[in-house]
Image (cartoon, rainbow, N blue to C red; front, top):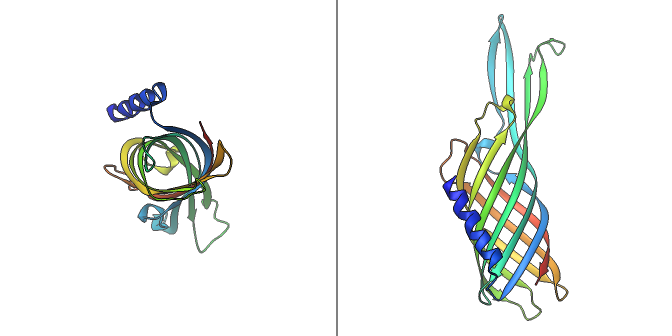
Length: 206
């Protein structure tokens, strides 16, 4: 919780004292793709009254909604603070493969989400004359994981590292589009979640 408080204080200071050369506000939506074992289909045999049932679970990520503020303090460097909510689900089934009409057969869907507070540093190796920019991105996140109780996972808060890139397409004096791709890996957590996020945001440049 102390780490989250530090991030909030930093973001508040940056918002209150916009001393950098350029400020960009962005808002958008994206999609997350899970890429590690947490998102692999698992199954096990369960014996009940001498009948063998198959229990299956498969996790997947989904939509994310995010907003951020970037502060450029040179032509090539910026700091971006952002928040996002990332949705996911689990498909669960408990079935008797020999009897599709068994009353104990069950199939359901459970939901989970990860709320993120992010702080990133961007570096632009390429600057285009038309105002478009491509940034390499590194940073870290404070994550708040919550799920339906049926998933049998504890509530957890944890830190993660981020790396990726941001491409800005400035088409008007103040308005443009931002494409973000980020790889996220947790640092210390009982829940091993790794994912890639792809986001398309509308930006407003002050």
